[in-house]
Length: 114
Image (cartoon, rainbow, N blue to C red; front, top):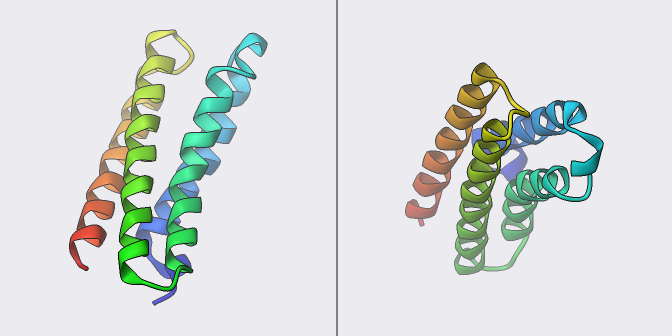
């Protein structure tokens, strides 16, 4: 199965789009700080899945799944920080947190399937 057809890819891609949309309301002074970090970590989840999937061995793919999982954990913290700083409301925070937890679970299952 192509990675682009997998639910973990689709959910991660949707999360990245949601992060890009939500960060528009962040203060301008965060554009090169927190906003850039949020963008990098969210897009890194999907980018590493794709890169790993196009490698030549399952061992390499497994390594990139691990990197994606780490990026999702980093994103989870950045979402928490954004909430603590008042850039996200409670509903946005809880929704994003649930999505991150789901992606981490899916990545763990994918990693363990090898």
